[in-house]
Amino acid sequence: MSDWTDSIVGDRMAVDREFNDRVLDSQFSSQEWGLIMTATEFEIEHPEDPDRARIVADTSKLPQMMPEIENIRERMPAAGGGAGDSSGGGLAGGSGGSGGLFDSIRNALGLGGSDGVDDDQLEAAERLVQEYADALQERLESKGSFEQVRIAYQE
Image 1 (cartoon, one colour):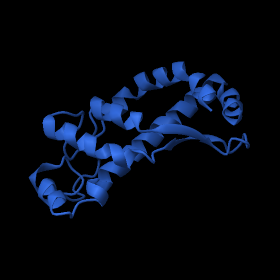
Image 2: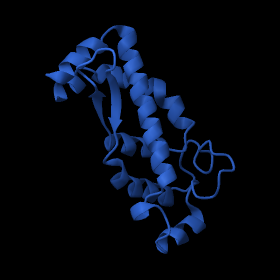
Image 3: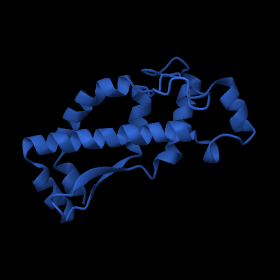
Image 4: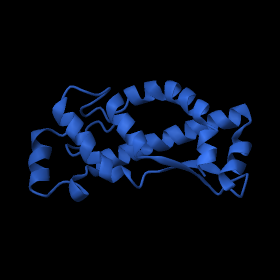
């Protein structure tokens, strides 16, 4: 199945460039986004059905990467294109922001997300990665090459 991903390297690079503004508007820095993408694999859901086939993000390894993202934030508190509470949640509460003293204490007491992972941050990363997958599929479809990619995925 790696052949199908090899065939879209150029398209991924183009989507990376186009998606950069979206990352800058997110709560993640470029360095954090790089780690998120490292932990993400892409698959094609329903590859046998041309009408239902779509690129989806496999984020099952993402929870293990999230503590490293927190480490980056602790080392560089001002890092991020939108770091802080600009995750789009407005006044949605104090649990999904940049971390800070309260979150550090809460996590130290074992009151944070599962295994020290901020569930809101994990969900935000998963949503952003799926937006990327959707943008990649849109690009492939607009070029007329998604059908070839879908077939390559099945082989």
